[in-house]
Image 1 (cartoon, one colour):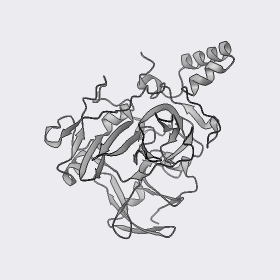
Image 2: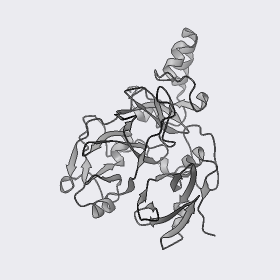
Image 3: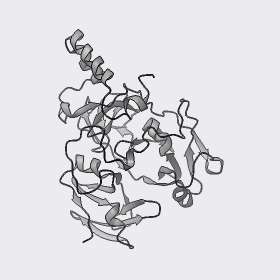
Image 4: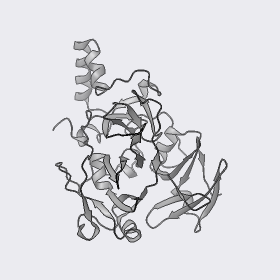
Length: 325
């Protein structure tokens, strides 16, 4: 089985014995030099913003999980490979609506796209359940992103090909490289069912499953993961308050964070008025399509992140948590 196959290298719990043995051999023969390059996937991770020992090799080499860099799209009435309840990430921006099926993103994690000339990077981490989209311009330059093969708190570390800086998806920040400390601007994106998205956006375009890569998009390499209590890679902080894979809407505003667990939101049948810091928000939850969004006082959607509870808590252990008593 090829080393770039994510089923063997990323979706298998722990690290195979043969993989560990190969790493030990590299350490012995190279005095640590090849070992370090192998586990860093060739990135220069000098003085990162996070402890280096908390960066873990996810299995695949750099670009072993290939990003989609020249995405092709289908008209909504030509899509035959999606069922109504299939999950999609959806963006409506600059007069264009696009859907990105999770069954494709499971195998690629990153799509470098544009909306009427505006560069946008769509990212999805199957291990954390996190779909996040960003303005792909940094310091005025459009960036092309790839999958580094490295993880922090079980979450994908992206890298931009122009500077080879590593970026943490959830904290939206470059953690090493020439752009260290720079933030990506998150943009609103839905995480919902195909039926729900197309009902709200009947003219949507859909990412084609003809990606140029040989993948079986009808089969998930993470089958059973979303219901399991197991976390496959180390995380810094853990909480037993909810099932590890309980979905939450994560809000991060001005350095303050709050999680809205679906288990709590499902107890209310109305829009929830809430506050985070000095920001008044309205939380809309759809239990049928298992999705939600958060609006500001003027009714504008605030970028949020639907994530597994364990992932949100791993990054933000001091997070506020919405609960109905």
